[in-house]
Length: 359
Image 1 (cartoon, rainbow, N blue to C red):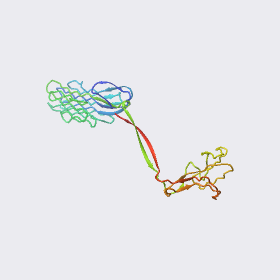
Image 2 (image 1 turned 45 degrees about the vertical axis):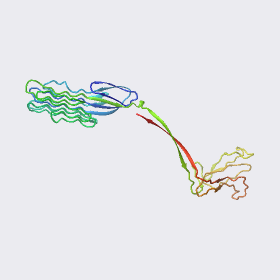
Image 3 (image 1 turned 30 degrees about the vertical axis):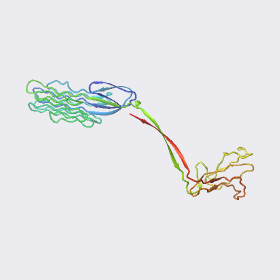
């Protein structure tokens, strides 16, 4: 995890190798409070800057940032406060709008408040300043607070500065009689207080807005350590015989004993598996299998069967050869299956591997 915070000025952020996304948080600069002269009344407070958050795709290289300056250069006297500047990242990729400057007053009319910064994308706008008062010896309006990470900035409701929301900046206090407006004491992006009314010849100036801010957060995925662990375990599956003996159908065997066998066993004495072998049949749906064996030939027959619990220990299944159904042949060996005691089991060992990334 990497983070970088800039609280004023401008420059470049160099994207580290392996970083593909950066979270950009910007606060616009606060607007300056309005100014006042001997012929006018108190001025309005400046507006707070907008807060904007955006996740931006990046690659290795430099990205320009600007922390919008707070408004401050409007001269004393009959002048509106200067607007706060926008804060930006990568030119126009991410923008947080600065607050507007408070308005100057006119004869017997207080200066209007500067509005908070407002953008077009998802954001939290800045709060507005407070309007100046159109009476003699009146105090200037308070400055609005900047937007925060979860709330719109607070609007000033009197000469008192607007309070800060979470991660936002406070406003500046409005100037008293014959006093300049006050700049916010902490940031980011609060609006300055408006200038107070004077009765003499000395002009007063609005408080400066607070500078905006740029905060960057990123994750370097190429430097995350990866630990690979291999786990092994044995699982025993118990196979319980079913309740009967039946043919077991298979998609790999054609119906009605139409699939032929090939020589798999050792040829009998005096025979070869080539010239002396005659194709037999594989069956999973016919019983018995009928084969017309040529003189001097040998063959192989195959069945697919499934045994069951209906047979007890010691019971036998025989595979016999008949002469067109008559049991008249002399068999040297009768193939058979004997049901044994106990429960057959199959042991299966599975190995799992996974990679765990540690931040």
